[in-house]
Image (cartoon, rainbow, N blue to C red; front, side, top):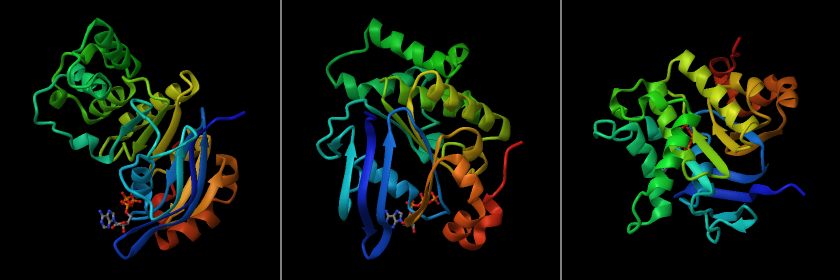
Length: 252
Ligand SMILES: Nc1ncnc2c1ncn2[C@@H]1O[C@H](COP(=O)(O)OP(=O)(O)OP(=O)(O)O)[C@@H](O)[C@H]1O
């Protein structure tokens, strides 16, 4: 039987009086790669924060690995790269390996120190994202694309079952973005990682993911990329209204 990694049932969320999520139902199974799209302000980050237990739903239920979010003992099972990762403390003098090691602090607790095993995990995570040559480099001296890889390594170091990325390619050039999607595809296909990618990039949906969800307060679509491609205009017109021209482009 397929294991539900994320199961969202009839989720409602409002900031004060403003409803942002309205009756969301969504299931992500182990090994799937979901691309979540939707216009600015459509509730994507809010949905992610509910999944991570950072926001409490007004109504509905979220289960992670079969357990209600508030009870799920997640310790390391979810890796998260936030929208703000790219501007994270870059003035702070830390090397790639130190940044990646910080991804283990939650598991280690305050009292245990990094040992040989932990540093080995750090090296493996750095290798996975192709940054071995930069492990002792100051993070502030890397390119945007390399920094982004370092943050992914930090999310991977605790060996999560689910990796959530919130618009990770904002401000990153086209070539780095392409390499980044290749890395996600590799993590998905060869390492069997379950992935949830929030993106503005509709083009990536046809090349990398195996599930598409389109959100604008309500879920306008959830299905596979082929079905999405067939109904793309209709779905995007419903969900995006007039912004559709800006977002509907494809990679070649
Ligand atoms: N802390 C908050 N307090 C009040 N309103 C908020 C808060 N955070 C977000 N909102 C509002 O909720 C709506 C959904 O925001 P959210 O950040 O979830 O959208 P998003 O789809 O991630 O947008 P974007 O693609 O622009 O990042 C927006 O109208 C936003 O202004």
